[in-house]
Amino acid sequence: MTTVQLRRYRLEPGRTAEFLAWFPTVLPVREQYGFRVLSAYADHALDTFTWAVAHDGDEEAFRTALEAYDASPERAAAFETFPRVVTEQVNGFVDDVLAR
Figure 1: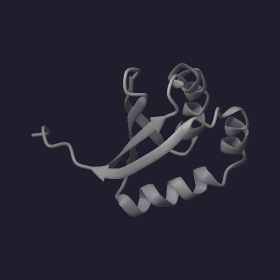
Figure 2: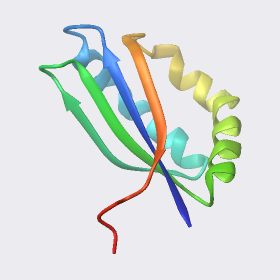
Figure 3: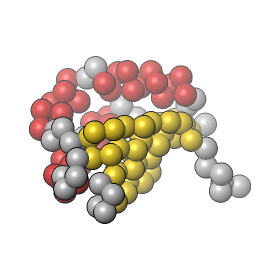
Figure 4: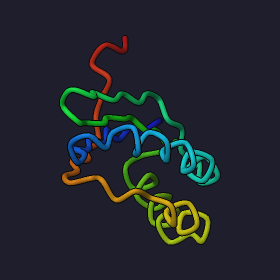
């Protein structure tokens, strides 16, 4: 079983490029904690960023891994250069309705 979380961010107008320049720095850290990025999309016209991240196991396993990731020194180091441009964030667990 794999659990997928869809993460949607609204960014400060005109600062999407700044966020996108930083975003790759956090990916290796996520991978250390068992996460895989399935997709990542930027809508420059609407200043939004949407990405899907997966982790093996159920939602509880995902949350447990997320807690470990959030508390990690590696994440803290990656976020030292975070541009702080996210003005709104909506996260939720999703199902692939096209999977057969």
